[in-house]
Length: 473
Image 1: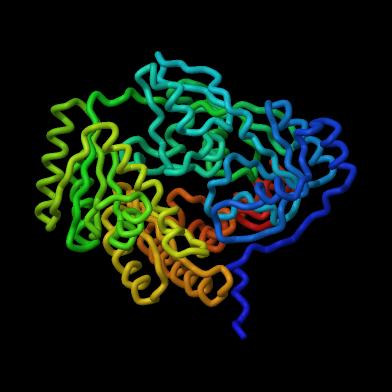
Image 2: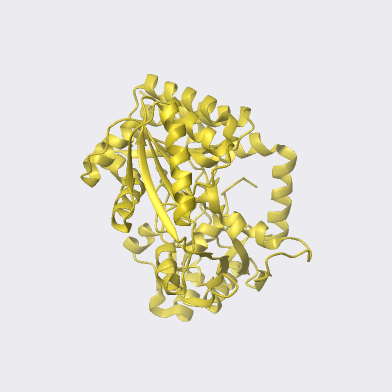
């Protein structure tokens, strides 16, 4: 018989009662927009993590800030948890109803409210997805650069402090969210921040909410920065004899100050999976996928310098993708790497993890982690926004074999511990959710986590806002 999994590998299920009186009140207020159908509840009770938990007791489909506020007020009256839901693409168990409660689906709150092209800002409802936003602002000559891969909602991206492939040049949601509208645990609607570029007015509540993973409130409006569409964009792929050569190239590019927009590492395992999934013929070697933004002359200069650096590390088969169609094909293949990996082993689930380290320590962290994964025999995929020291492993396991999950979690523990020892973080962009709670304590320290608890208790005294995530109370 297999030994039971260590406690930290599974979510702690501690269901709180959802009274029938609350369900009746929600149905009275929302009519058909409150569903207790099992298939709807199950859809809203899972994300892209490998964790499992009972579904929420009901799902409310909000269409306005007033809807969200009323749902939260009703839940608060009965001390019932509230879990915000966008499109369900999170990776660390953020959406699981581990203490029961109701899911508030904001996907119907999907209007772009104000485009202020002169100020390079836009205000949207939380259910607007990044692709939808870019489609609606493209006629202004502007774009929103944060690209986590999945077509996530702006509300979810703010809640998890997402970033992605463009972060090396444009930053993360932390740098790009200017203001928020939030429904608090009491059902009050507050606004944080303004459209001004900077402010010294009081506590920075916007930054507090960005990355709070739904544990302090439900985001109902987001104001973000926009950027001018580059005059010229060029993408390139370059294969390398080893992961080390690709990583050393990346480190040198960043340390020389080349303003590269994107630089993604894909290991040979992942290239093979992507080729099979997307019907490509990329060389099945470690690869950097890069993109350059700027004027035609600056793009040319950047690309030539990077090509020279890559050649010095054994880079070869430097291929260009200058047309929008070619670039889209390459980046679509990269964004589909997760699904390509899942399909490479039918019936598997991925134990996904990410870390981020100072760029000078990237090679140390990544190469040791690759060696451990290779030695384990567990199939895996590796991709990384390595321009900012962030990379992702996905260990492919049979969900019916606890020993495989435990072996993958051992690898994850070694990887994250290594990143922390190198002055990095336990998660660069996935968020803490359920999966990284122990690591947050190691990274931040008991005093800092207790301060987070104090904030949580002050703003959510009944502990109804996505309870059991980030840390325990």
